[in-house]
Image (cartoon, rainbow, N blue to C red):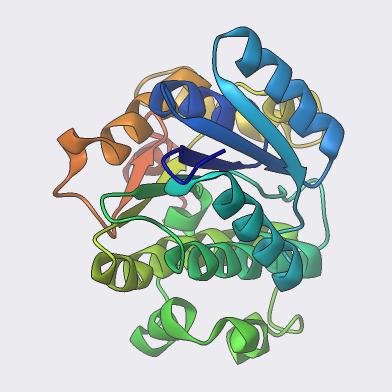
Length: 278
């Protein structure tokens, strides 16, 4: 392959990432990476059958060496023009320590690494979460620390000391708030390369993971959120992809460093509707 090939890197082979890749990768090569190669290969088969040129690799976003290997693999294929970072673990899947390492530290690693290889005119999206918008306000100093602390020092912040993190949901909220803040700060660095980076914070999106949540111990809470929301339903991966397509296209050329909350009004209900506690 030559360096004229344009590469979109998809990290996390789930439904949302695939939906975004379909919107933004026509005429480009999609490099699908996942912690489980079988997931990447399954997604690759689906996208290949839809006419896309695809390859796969393993990545552990919590490992700098692994993320660096991913960037090298992408550069061996062609010019990196797009990043879709959709990997992560949920509160029901992992411990607070693992969530902070994968969702927060891992995202910071990915943003830093791909800033160093993204082409001029390139763009990326990070999938955050509505949960980050419901974390109580942090101090100005804490916000800045989450946004700008050197990646290798990030998990050493007092705010993230496991003695200060209540549970997996709290770790998830901190991580997703951190994703939004990190994207804002990284947009400055990406801009120096003529590239853009944004975040999307979806609410409950119907994916295999969400179905597991709906049928698990947190299911009642999920259904309460859906019924209390202004829209009154869950979302779909394609709806998230519609927003990502705007953000990664020329139509979104004036948008960078932003976080787009799309949760059907669940967060609004938490602050001003039937889900409000104060």
